[in-house]
Amino acid sequence: MPQLSYKGDLMPSSPIRKLTPYSDKAENRGIKVYHLNIGQPDIDSPQPALDAIKNEPFKVLSYTHSEGTAEYRTALSDYYKNRGLELEPSDMIITNGGSEALLFCFGIICNPGDEIIIPEPFYANYNSFAIQSGVKIVPIQSKIEDNFGLPPIETFEDKITDKTKAILINSPGNPTGYLYSKAELEKLKELVLKHDLYLISDEVYAEYVYTDEEFVSVLNFPELKENAIIIDSESKRFSMCGLRIGALISRNPEIIKRALKFGQARLCPNIISQYAAAKAHQNAGTYFDDSRAEYISRRDLLVTELNRIPGVICPHPQGAFYCMVELPVDDTEKFAIWLLNDFDLNGETVMIAPGNGFYSDPEKVKNQARFAYVLKKEELQKSVDILREALKKYPGTSR
Image 1 (cartoon, one colour):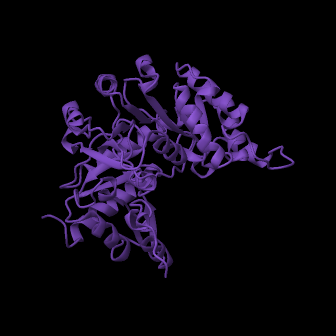
Image 2 (spheres, one colour):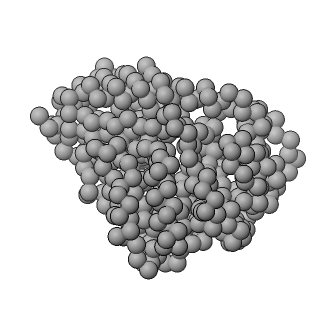
Image 3 (cartoon, helix red, strand yellow):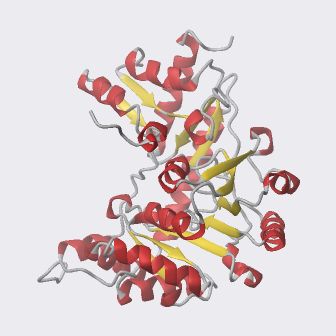
């Protein structure tokens, strides 16, 4: 067999999806599995988007412009203006999901071997995108006892080398739900300006903030016009994960110019996805308010009930729909497999995402897991009840 690339060896399996075979086997045995492992909301997608797909007017499903359709880019620009952020359609390149936006971003700003500093735990696929792009992730670990807040800014400066190109943040964050404050973003702003770095901000959960503080985007800082790059997506905003529609956004025209070259190489984003997303924005109504209220209700139930289980530590997420939880077990991956292979409560069990996949080194943290509160409250309550009983019987539970 001819030799394969080293990237295939280095590419990590998704902590969110890699246990799916165990889940499939459990369900084939007749076990009901509550999926808290994946950020797939059960909230309905907007009806205008569904109607747009059902009644799409195209006679030919053609290519669109590589930067995206004028209709969708205008709708997205208007959305940002309604949030108080002045963006023009020319400030964005539409992508096939936020994932493609991140790949474009890494390709635009980094040469092979360059470094990007990221607070961890972080969205697991950052590891994968870095490997695909030949980029080295330099992690800075946040602490559960600090609610996974921004680590001291001095620790960032200590990691900056001549290979450092950017700092990447995710706010509100996946997997922690942490929301960076304006004061924290001010510190990052000063640091990237001092060292002439890019500040990449993954803001795909911006609509889902649950504090009295308003969400602060890095676009709120005019000084960062040349430095700020936004990763955007409709997946979680409108519960449309399967449409795979996102955007790379920057007020730096050189970033957009180069992103367009990457866009041209992959031809174009999906025509129907753009059409549906445009209609969702044009007819959003109370969708965000209604969804936000539901997520707050789910979060409050899950966090309260988890913290009632002996030995469990669950910080209070301020946004998104995840919580990173410390469990009193020897290894959450082993525990997650055991839940699917060997345990059920009245024919039901729970699937969780082991926390090690959200760190740069999977050996670094063994006792954390990510929970996604994307199920109805009665299902979340059942999930916690199952977890409570499972921890009493799991052989690796700390007594």
